[in-house]
Length: 291
Image 1 (cartoon, rainbow, N blue to C red):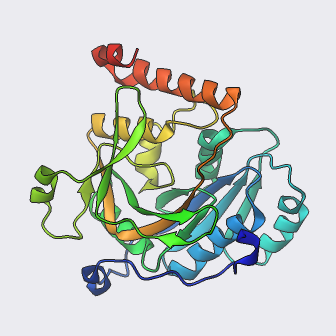
Image 2 (cartoon, rainbow, N blue to C red):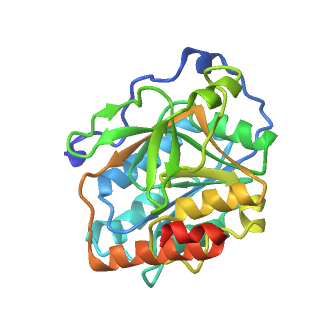
């Protein structure tokens, strides 16, 4: 179905009315958007790229860096290089070995020149005005990791569903990520319906942070493999190292959630290894709760 939907489409306006009244300084930091992909559907990948280009002001978008993690699909090889060459500000890096999301994102980050790094999955669509609120928050608090509100794009119909109510990311002792409604005590410290939401963790779909902060706090953990739980490692490390993790309500990005995943042994093994790495590195005496 994705192939039959236009690569550039208008999404329904789902932001809070107060978001539409926000004015942003022209001196906001610039952003590099890093997208790592492996055999992503042609249309879904390019819809992600076009939605960024169509919604991000050129003054703030330094570049989009695509990292091809050894894709095998034909169109993602020669045809993609030709297509991307016609897009201003889009770079394509090809890995000659399988890296996984974590190392793929780090490869892209090493080539990025924007003040802010935004890591985005290869199956997203951005709402109008998604970028400026993230940059504004990071310009006032560079020791933070921020994420948009993640809306749902149905993987079968590609219909866009906006999240009802505000949620934050949490995790349990098994180091599994969940969403929960923002608790009342957190609502009380927020000054308005569009104030940032403090969150124990962020989802990995779209994450933004200051480039120097990312590098100075250790980037992604290179000892974690392939993909899985990297969002928790980043979130826990940020909080424990004196930073903050927040969701920015005026920034919204749709994400294609598949209800089936390649639950192969290698995937499960990588996830378990990464969780053990988090427990051993960051949980201290609390790691007994994980084991």
